[in-house]
Structure formats: structure tokens, C-alpha cells
Length: 74
Image (cartoon, rainbow, N blue to C red; front, side):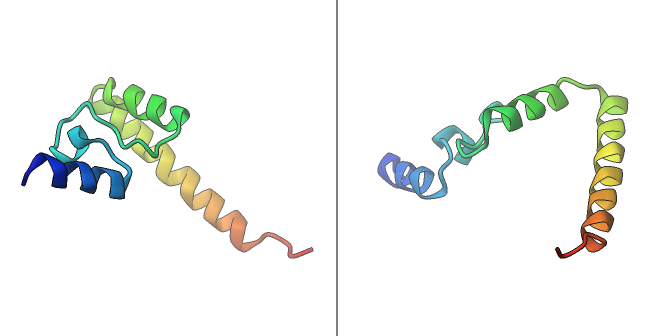
């Protein structure tokens, strides 16, 4: 793949060329600053911390989904 094609793909998907090349430190440009901060913090955790975050996230997602199903339509 040449540089021009790589740039076109990056523009189309709204990501950096580093992201397309698989570099770990590159985050997609469409993420908000808050999302980038959360990802960076997550990456700084050890395995136990990551598992804890994943469990909390799964629990909160299920709770929000259940509340969404019970939300009144007024």
C-alpha cells in the first residue's frame, strides 16, 4: 500500500495513519477527549484493575439496559 492510499483510508475512517498501521499508542480521532482519557487510564491498570473495570462496566451496562426497558413513555 502506498502513502497516498493510506492517507485516503485514514481520512475515510477518521483515524490516524498510525492507527491503521497498528501502533498501540494511536487512538482514533473520532474519540472525545473524555473517551481518550478513559482509555489511557485503562491501559495503565494491571490485570486485576482491568478485570475490575470490565466487571463494573458490564454491570452498569446491564443496569442501564434494564432501566431503559422500564422507562415510561411520557
